[in-house]
Image (cartoon, rainbow, N blue to C red; front, side, top):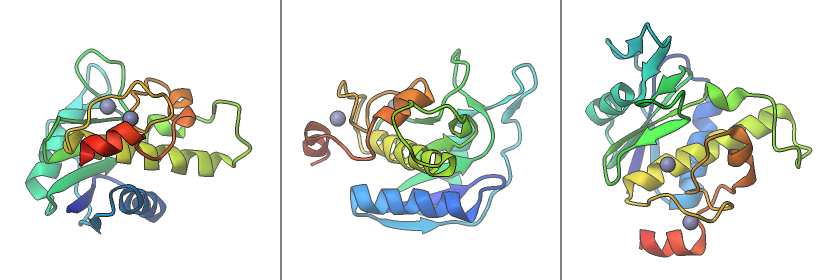
Length: 173
Ligand SMILES: [Zn+2]
Ligand SMILES: [Zn+2]
C-alpha cells in the first residue's frame, strides 16, 4: 500500500515530514512526497473567500502516484454548506485533502502542556490519518479518542489520538 502526498501551495518541509511519519506509523504503508502543485484553477470561491475542497481532491487523484493520494494545502477549504473543513475524502476513493489553515488556531483543549507548534503538528498528523482512513473505507467512529472520530473543532482534534481504535483497526482488515 502506497500513499502519495501532494503538496498544493506553500507547504513546509515540517508539515510534509509530520504527515508522512504519521501515515507510516499508523498504516505501515509506503509514503512518497510528490512535487509541489499550484492551486487548481477554479478552486477559489470569491463569495466565500475560500477554496473548494473537492477541487483539491480531484487534483490529488489526477497527479498522485499512490494507491491513495492526499493533497496538503495551507489554503482555507470548504465543503458544501459547512463553514470550513479540516479535510475531506470520499469513502473508498483514491484522493483526499487536508488543510492546515484552521489547524493553526492557538487554543487547545487546555489539557496539554505541549508547545503550540507541537500541538499543530499533532493535529496535522491526526487529520491526515483520518482522511486516509476514509479512503480505506473507514467511516466516522463514535469513540472520541479514535482518530476516525469526526472533529468539528480543533479542541475535538486535540482530544483524539493519532491511532485507530481497536474496532476501526479490525474494519481496516
Ligand atoms: Zn471524516
Ligand atoms: Zn474507531
